[in-house]
Length: 158
Length: 241
Image (cartoon, rainbow over all chains, first blue to last red; front, top):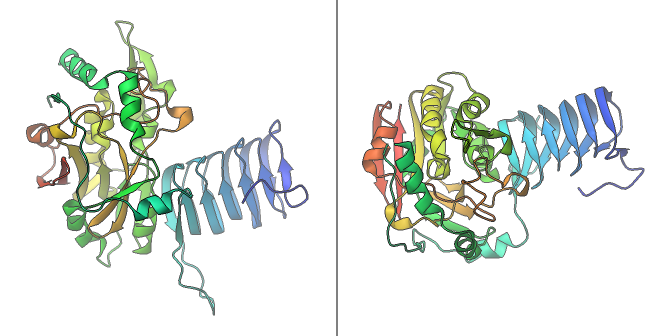
């Protein structure tokens, strides 16, 4: 999910600071500072690269590109992009984490309610940068890693 | 002891240019695979129907989150290496030298209930962690692991050399790991003590090498310790509280 176009999301810009309870019934993009709580049941929240949120978040979908300190409750999906710094617990049905994202907390995958035609997908999605896939295919296998050579290696007494 | 350790570590740091060259050869996106006997032992617990509580203190890995949550386990993730590079942890000691505030670090990290975890995935964190943090972190881990719970850690052997790259470990299968070179985050790259990470451009550097006796001493409060020797200059260690 890239930066949403105006009109698609309510937008909190870089210079905006909000303290208190934020609730709504439309999708929200936060690129500023929010402290308090964010309640968007049934809608999505995107924390942009400049966003700094210190709040517990409750939404249908949550995408973190900036900084979030607080718990995430995403009824459908949570996504941590590579620039994300998220500290708090995540409760969701599905989660995607990009390589490079920083996360500190618990992940609680909540079982989806049975649906008639759901695909048996994994609830967790691994995201890597585009260059990773071909590199992985040609990666060395087994334990044969090249070790750098040094004349001596010091040890520490414990 | 501290000064001896400091001089040992100085030998490891090398020049910034050396570090940059060594890191260049390893692409951050490339993943290497390796078999892990320690993980295979842990897999006996992870494959069971009984849900367990797992703490991963390596770099955040979506693969590990997926592997564990798919099997109904609870996972906690806390990237200790990254946390140790917080510049605000730098304080001056009585000699005016920049050091890492280890008391504050352990007060702010690994804050869990006693005996909370069945398994701790330590990976190679101890080899790259600042000297002042290693013992306090292991002591804290001991208290957070349940009696009978297990900790998996990797230690480089002397042959690995000081430029051994720091990896993010992804569980690929019950006895297979994928290793991905870690680059420190741009905003956290400056090390708190100056010495630890500022000498390098993009990556963490090996801080020391533990031999078997050091490892046994480090985990002496645990009830048992098992070594697995590998051919890639890594000792895998599985300890049981």
